[in-house]
Amino acid sequence: SLGDDVHLVYGLGKDFGACGLRLGAIYTENEFLKRVLPMIVFTGQASVQTQRAFSLLLSDSTWVPKYLEAHKEILRQQYLSACKHFDQAGIPYVESFSGFFMLIDLSKWCITQDKEGEYELWRILVKNAKVVLTPASDFFYQKPGFFRLIFSACSPEQLHTALTRISNCLVKME
Image (cartoon, rainbow, N blue to C red; front, side, top):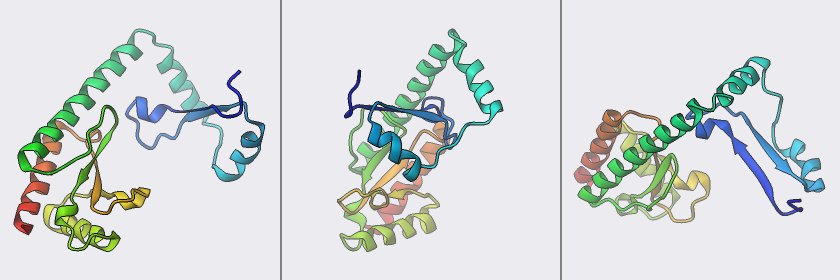
């Protein structure tokens, strides 16, 4: 028994690099949570085609571990590439041990140290660097000037181009 305080939440999209798939499960033994979840979270049954496709995918006990290992290595290489670039460019970031994105600290380049300054820098990066980062305030990060860089949804070449554009734009602002 897990009890009332342990809940398992899983999404297939993250493990299989299928952003936006929205296929997953929530398991809880908490009766209150079971009652309120349908009121606050949009859930629905996955289509028969989606269930069938993922059933076949997950039953391939040879392919799944190989894919997950390869996917993990690609993420690791992308993360290390971004870290190396930011280290060389003098751009601070939050170290991570896993994930699809990283937080970079661009507060030094914000005109003001608040949400408005963060959004002004966001507009500058979009206009001049042609790169879209997510301001961390959009997901309730407390310190202004941090941005989420998603490194999992692009090729190594695209990542290099984006990082170079960001750095060049920031250098011109100094």
